Image (cartoon, rainbow, N blue to C red; front, side):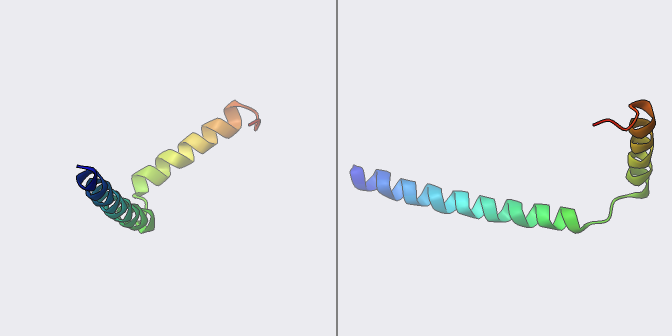
Length: 58
């Protein structure tokens, strides 16, 4: 019975490592994609509001 638990633990670690690697790949690809123009415009509007509305304090 102990052997089954150890093997299960190893399998789980391997599965978690594979999931981690896959997530890294997906996020790396997403970070390399360009931001759509609409999002850039929205971010610019938010920055403009934040800078003028709060007097530049953080």
